[in-house]
Amino acid sequence: MRNIVVIDAPSNLGLRPPAPGTVPGCYKLAGALRERGLLRRLKAFEGGVVVPPRYDRGDWQEGNGVFNAAAIAAYTPKLADRIERHVRAGDLPVVLGGDCSIQLGAALALRRIGRYGLAALDASADFRHPGNSDRVGAAGGEELALATGRGQDDLTDLEGLRPYLRDEDVRLFGIRDGDEDRGELGALRIPTVTVGELRQWGAADVARSAVTSLENAALDGFWVHLDADVLDPSVMPAVDSPDDDGLHPDELLALLRPLVRSPRCAGLNVTIYDPDLDPDGTAGDVLTDVVVAALG
Image 1 (cartoon, rainbow, N blue to C red):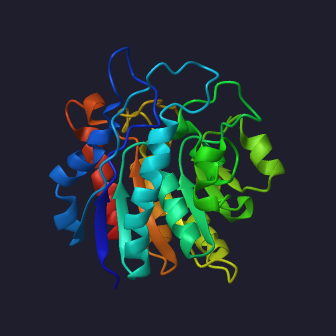
Image 2 (image 1 turned 90 degrees about the vertical axis):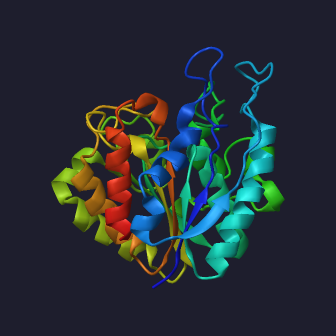
C-alpha cells in the first residue's frame, strides 16, 4: 500500500471573479475537506500547503490572453516540485484545490518524470484556446488545452517541456451530452465519454476499460483530475458553472474508484468546490464522502 499524502493547492488564479470586487471562493476547498476529517478518514500523511500568489487581475481586459498568467506560471513549477517529490518517493498525492489550473502543476511534474496520461472527470473539457475561442482568459477553463500545448508560451512551455500531455494520452469522462468541444476533441482522437454514455454503458465498466487503456506500456502511469462540477447541481450546486444532467454520487464513485485504485495511478486532484456557495455544507459532505470511499 502506498502512502496517501494530502497537499493543499488553494489557488483560485484561474477563475473569473464571481462578482465585481470579489474573488472565487474555491481556494477554501482544501480547508473544507480537511474540516470534514479527510486526512483522518484516509489515514493520510500531511503534505503541507503550496501557497499561491495573490489573486490580482490588474488592468487585464478581454483579448489580453490568460489573466493572472504570470502568477500561474510562477505557481505551477512550485506545485510541480511538491508533487514530483512525492510521486518519485512512491506516494499517492491527493492535491486539494483550488481551481482546475492546478492541474498544470501535476502535468508539469509528471512530464519531468516521464510520459503520463490523464483521466479527467469534469463537466466540461476545459479546452478553450485561441484556435477555437476569442474569449481566452480563465485558465481554469483552459487547462487541458494549455497542458496539451495550445495557448501562450509562458504557460504551455514551462521549462521547455511542451506539451506536458500528449493528446492520445488523455481521457475525458462526465462531460455533458451536448458539449460543444466534442467535435474538436474527436478529430484530435481524445476519447470522451458523456454522462449519457456512462449511464448506457455503466460507470464501473467504463472505468475498468479506461484503466486498461491507461495501463499500457507506452505510459509510465496516469493522473486523475476530479472537478466537482461533474456532479449534478442537485447534489453539487457549489461550483462556479453548474451544468444540469450531471453524475450522481454513486455514479461518480463507480467511475472514480477503479481509476484511483490502479497501481499505475500517480495521484489525484480535487477542484472547483466553493464552500462560499454551500452554506449548509451538504455539497462538501458529498464530495468528501466520495473521495474517501474511492480511496479508502
